Picture 1 (cartoon, rainbow, N blue to C red):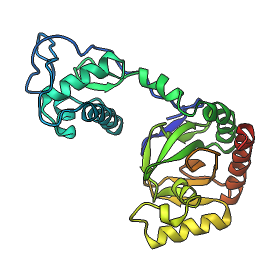
Picture 2 (cartoon, rainbow, N blue to C red; picture 1 turned 180 degrees about the horizontal axis):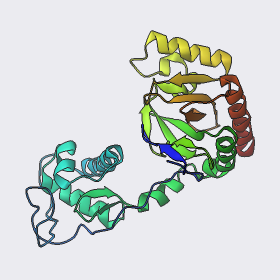
Picture 3 (cartoon, rainbow, N blue to C red; picture 1 turned 120 degrees about the vertical axis):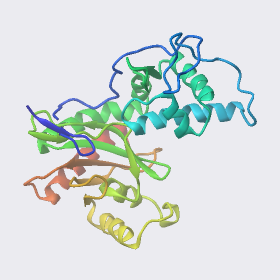
Picture 4 (spheres, rainbow, N blue to C red; picture 1 turned 180 degrees about the vertical axis):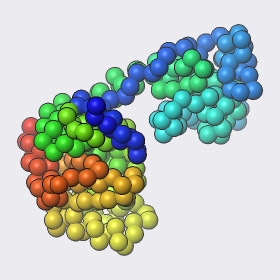
Length: 284
């Protein structure tokens, strides 16, 4: 069977990556207090008492709820309530109340051990992000992934990070790389980051871009593509070309792989053709 690498691990695919369904959907409901390990007591209780702590404004509550989703996404594994509270920097009772609201909307669930993970509802929400781009890009990404036997994805600038919007793994590759939608890394790293920054004036670059990376960005602008090795994930390679889209943040279409006999220039030409096709379909 094929294998896949996910941030350094291996398995196969052939369909676009998406947010996976949680292992179970235990509700964050009840009326008891959490145990010292962070799991609910035998009563399964979650306090719904009002947060009267200083500064507990609506905007702060929303910000904390969003931060919990980011924490769970970054963790890549279920977390206990205590772990979430610690990473969020709040008392566990505050974390419980926030999680209860998120659970009510299907955005988080509990596994059989009482740990919290992202809910399947997030997948349907993600499908609505840049829906037209995803719809037009999916056939092109699939074709590139299968033609090159590499995982193909679109990354878009999100503040100071390159955010993976959609990805497709090759159908019949012996070993492929899983580039999960929603994964992100500093834009000042990796091939996608180079072509994204090449679309921006230097004055809009994030702080901390090294002179060496800046030189590679300039080189990418001249050559029309960028490459990287060991920059984001050890031992992985990437090639990227720009995907400028009208009315959207700077983006890149890229492939990530372990090794290939194909020349980097050949990979770049295939990506450039896909970029042109996607832009043409969107009228960009």
